[in-house]
Amino acid sequence: MGGGSSWPSPGVRHRAVGEELRVAARTPVLETFPALRAWQRKALVEYLRRRTEDFTAVATPGAGKTTFALRIAAELLGDGTVEAVTVVAPTEHLKNQWAEAAARVGIQLDAAFRNADVHSAADFHGAVVTYAQVGMAPQVHRRRTMTRRTLVILDEIHHAGDSRSWGDGVKAAFEPAVRRLMLTGTPFRSDDNPIPFVTYERGGDGLMRSRADSVYGYSDALRDGVVRPVLFLAYSGETRWRTNAGEELAARLGEPMTQDLVAQAWRTALDPAGDWMPQVLRAADARLTVLRNAGMADAGGLIIATDQQTARSYAKLIEQVTGEKAAVVLSDDQGASARIATFAASDQRWLVAVRMVSEGVDIPRLAVGVYATSASTPLYFAQAIGRFVRARRPGETASVFLPSVPHLLGLASEMETERDHVLGKPKEADGFDDDLLERAQRDDQASGELEKRFAALSATAELDQVIFDGASFGTAAQAGTPEEEEYLGLPGLLTADQVSLLLTKRQAAQLAAQRRRTADRAAQPAAAPTAAPPAPMSAAQRRVALRRQLNALVAARHHRTGQPHGKIHAELRRLCGGPPSAQATIEQLEERIATVQTL
Image (cartoon, rainbow, N blue to C red; front, side, top):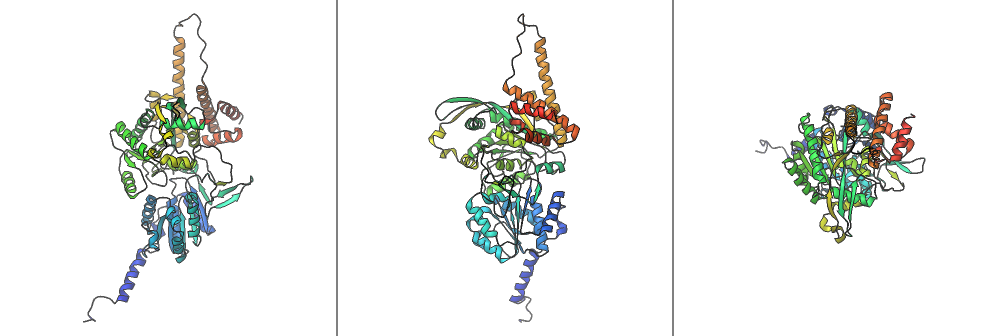
C-alpha cells in the first residue's frame, strides 16, 4: 500500500518546494532588459570598471535611474557578487513602483516587507523599504544585510539627511552591505547634514562638496531628447491683503520687496477665493487643450497645492473651469497610490496633490503644471518640475505655470544648473526653508489667532513673462487677452530650438504691435497746440525692454557661435555677477548688455 502511494516522501516534497522557490527567484536574464540609453551604458561601464563599494549616480528626473539601478542589480546577481537586493525609497507609493519595475525585468522585490517580518520570503531577491522604516529599526535591516551578500540601492539618497535618526539608521543598517548604489535626480540638500555613504571632497575654498561618480544633468538629457523642454509661464498681478495687525497692504507680485511682503503677496495670489488662481487655472487648462489637440491626446495636468484644504478648493475651481472633476491626492497612503495609478492609466485632465506627487512618481503623460504652493527650496522645486519632463516621443513639451516670485523665477532660469551638497557654507536668504514648508502643510485649524487674522482681499493675474533655457521672453499680457493666447497657443510638439525660435518671434510680434499702437496714437490730431512729451517708462517697462534687448543679443551670439542660449546667459552671469535675467535689476541687465556686445 505504501509502495503504491503517488505522494513523495516529506523530504522529497520539501526539496520540490525548494526547487520551485529557486526557480521563482532565479537570476535575471540580461537579454530581457530594455536597451540602455547612452548615459546608462556609460555609467554602467564605469560602475563595472571600478567595482567599488559605493557609487553615486546623479541623473535628472525622467532620465531612467530605476532602469540603470536594476541593470546593475542584475549584473551583480548574475556574477555572484551579491545574493540579495534591498531598495530604500522615500515613500510607500515608490516602494510599489520599484517592485513593479523590478518584476518586469525578472527581479522579485517584496514591497510589503515590514520590520516585524525580520526576513523576506525565499522566493524574493530582496525587499523595498522606506527611509522611515529603516530609521525605526536599523538593527532589523542590519541583520538582513549581514545574512546574505547584499546590494543596497538608496533611491533619492538626500532623504537620508532628512533627520539624524534616518541618517544614523541608514548608516548602521547598511554598513555591512557588499555594494551600495546611491541615486538622486534633484539638487542635494541645502543644510549641513552629511549624507551617509556619499563621498565629500574639500575644494579650494576649504568647503566640503559632495562628489558624484556619474552625472547626467537636465541639459544633457534635453540635448539627447530624453526629457522635454519646459516653458515656465510666470504670472504676476495686483494683490491686496489685510495683515494680522489689521493694516491693508497692496503689492504687485514679482516687484522687488522684502521677503515678508513677498510671502504675503504670494499667499494672497494663491488664495482659492481670489481671482488670481481661477485666471491662471483657465490659462493652464487652455494650454492643456492645445497640447491635446497637437498630438498629446492623453496629456494631463497637475496642480501642486500647499495644504489639503487648498487642494480641495483648487479641485472645485478646476471643475468649475473645465466641467470635469479632478483627481485629488492628499496623503501618502494606499488609497493615494491607487488614485495615482488610476489617473496615470486614464485620460483624465487634472490631478490635484499636496506633496504626494512631488518626487519619483511616474506619470509620463503629465505635461502641464500649476505650481500653487509656498514651497520654494531648490530641492522641492526640482522634484516638482521633474514630474513633467519625462519624454515619451520627440517634440513633446511641458508647460509650468507659476507665480512671478523672484526666487521661483531664479529657480526656473537655473533648470540646467548642477548642484553639489556643500557642508559648512554660510546660508543665504534664498526663499523659504523646509521648516516653513512643513508649517505650510498644517491645516489652518492648527494656526494661531494672529495667523487667522490674515485675510487675502483681492488678486488679479496677468502673464508677466515666459522663461525658457535661462532667458525671459514676452511683455506683460492681461489674462484672457489675445496677447496671452499667443503664448498659450504655442504648438505642443516642438524641439528645444523651435521653442526658442518661436518665443523670439512671438516677442518680436508683440513688441511690433505695441509700436504700431503707439504710432497710431501719435498720428491722431493733437488735442492741444503742443504735443505732450512722452511719459517716462516705469521701472517695470525698462526691465522688460532691457530683457528684450539682452535676449536679442544672446540670440545673435547663439547664431554666430552655436552656443546654447542658456550657456551664454550663464557666462554673462559669471562675468557680471547677479541673478538670472528674469530677476535681474536694471543695472545688472545694462551691464550684461554691454558685456555681451564685447564678446
